[in-house]
Length: 158
Image (cartoon, rainbow, N blue to C red):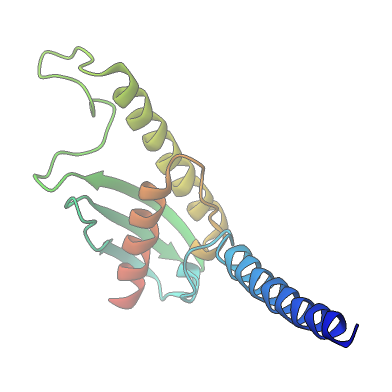
């Protein structure tokens, strides 16, 4: 009888430890799901001027470039373009063959969806003036990292 109680206490302690570990992992995952990927001061807090930034390159060499103007705490003229390592811009032609036809329909659609998401990032950034409030869009996390990285670079080099 005493042995059974001790076994139950051991199982209960192990269950509590497992529950605690799962809870901590869950909390860490939820903390990583926040909207903004940046903790830098908002871009609209910069002095009036035009700023340019380049994101760190991804493993495949893809990088992003952002440019924006700050005037009186408002952003304008925001542009963002992602580039392949060879300098090929991710634009309306990205994913097309040289003759303008679609090489891979699935890739082309994913690429164009990401470009649409990039424009949403630009619009949100220009409207809010704060990169920390720009939300990541499902299916465009690479573009999001590049965008946030480029904005952070522009702010760091201000």
